[in-house]
Figure 1 (tube, helix red, strand yellow):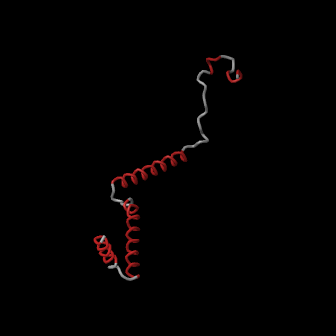
Figure 2: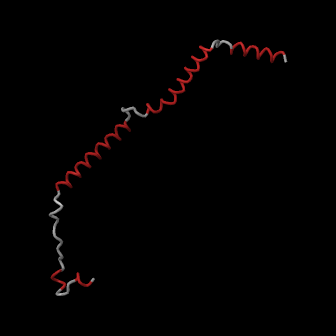
Length: 103
């Protein structure tokens, strides 16, 4: 039992190295900042622009936007009003019966 009390007394001496409310508050603040930085670090790690995957993703996005722009320009330039008239190539082969009236 005497050995245990000596061990507890020694532990208490080490714990008392941090004296004063100011020192304890400073250490608690530093520890909180450390936890904050550890929690935020992965967010900043994902924003590295030199990563080939990020560069590839950005290039694909630019290519898609360019393709969409070309498509929209082509659609605007195509005259929708002057669509070709549908022609029935078998009209002469059907004879006098009009296939449209049979429905």
